[in-house]
Image (cartoon, rainbow, N blue to C red):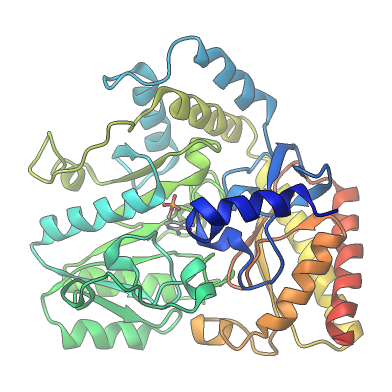
Length: 430
Ligand code: PMP
């Protein structure tokens, strides 16, 4: 008897391109056929065939408190009775904007959108309008959503599919996106010098989730800030993954360096579709209708999404103790897996910060996209499939971060480590 997931996927393939609504879900790089999820609660996902999995995807970031946290669920249930979308202002929009502004010091004004992709597209339009310049610089392997300007040397699903550049992106768009090497200030400086007075902005994931987890070297982010200031370019932190995850103020809470603009998503919707971009009032006031830079959205500031987001942000400010606790769990898992690699004599490298981490199947320290690409993706596929067999659902690609939630208890961590040991042994036998 085949599985229900299998039969749903066969049907999906007939009517949805590749059978999924976002490429990485298709298990293309790890093999096998995707699971269809029936429901999720706390630390667990349950598939349509009734099997439960410890969730290390967390919807790719939003589920900081685990799935269907009661405070968020109740808030959304209560809001349901008031209608689903008004196309007119609602009070929650003010409350969530005030909350974001109070939590992230570099943001004085913020605009809500519906996804991280929208946030980054709007942020570079604004940066171009503000600086009256056309070019932007991104880093190889950083993913900023699927806007045309960003599908140049992008990470995440694009890295997984091996299409660093998507057909359909025009060469005239591509020529305005320059790419530097992450953790290599000289490569950035070179681009600035080769393109004087034409760089509108540098955008980056200050901690990268989308080539697998990669952490900035000391001085790297500071150096980018100095170069941007010296050349009159804006610095955009894409904190769609790191926002509210690495600290209540995102990556910005871990460093004195402040960006000019920040993009957010994922956690601020608590699992419902939301994104946001914000920064200094002087820059944000250029957005319509305050200023001439157009950006709009029928469902932006949707009452259910803002309700979920507010409940999430309130949980975060009420429970700052989750951050050291998540870091303890992250370190414990990372260290446990490092020891397994060592005991089994397997080439692997674990990057971890707070509740984000990645096991790369390479012997090289992973500091940029080229390093990440030295990983043995066949081994990762074997590891992934065995972890799934053992009831642990990892992101189905080598080039993604794993996300921990507060719902993972110590017994869950032991389960993950036990599964990992079995999965690592499988990679040797293969
Ligand atoms: N920026 C970053 C850093 C992301 O990780 C993502 C999504 N993974 C995006 C932007 C795009 O967000 P969305 O998928 O909500 O459009």
